[in-house]
Image (cartoon, rainbow, N blue to C red; front, top):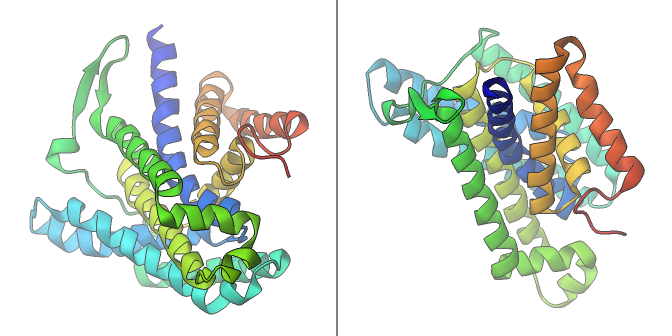
Length: 292
């Protein structure tokens, strides 16, 4: 029971990180229908820029180092996403193949520039004292506090996105643009500006995931590909453009990964992709996605 509870909790905390990153990808890919294969690069941008702010402050024992790094990482990734959308992707709307090729090229360039600037040595944030240590839990015993913080952050992101999309004027415009961009523009809405705002928000969430992820485990070159692939799987399983679907997909993928690591670690990745294949076979639009 203790092992099962630990695996379950590990899966949920991993799912929380996947949800934070994949929710940004769901906004961009699922709602805006923009193929952004540089989402993993935005994760790296947020994490490394935040680390550049965090490291000197941490060396001086500043208690606010991590708290400052979080908004800086989000802002850096958000601005990078706005620049990507405004300069390159804005005029390619509907050209999926061109968007994919351009963003793959951007991700390669960004990863190489970050490698040249920060080197290949793994970096890691250290959580502040209030979030460090362990918390006693039934069955599990003492569990890392920061992993529980990941779940709280994911819940906050999920509730915030639901409120934004369901209860605000911006959310109304975004949902209308999914169905008919031409009609939305004819109603006087500045569609390119809305796209910039949504893309910036999705990129900022990738940056938030970068700081959270680099606090939970070391940050190194190559994790951008991992989180891009995981975000794709999560959105496919949950359903494109659905925040609840992204949450469900993240939970299923996180649990599948942790259960696979516990039962057959060598072939754990097979369980994740078997889950995706099964969902596509039964419900191609995803578990909570809309039919075309």
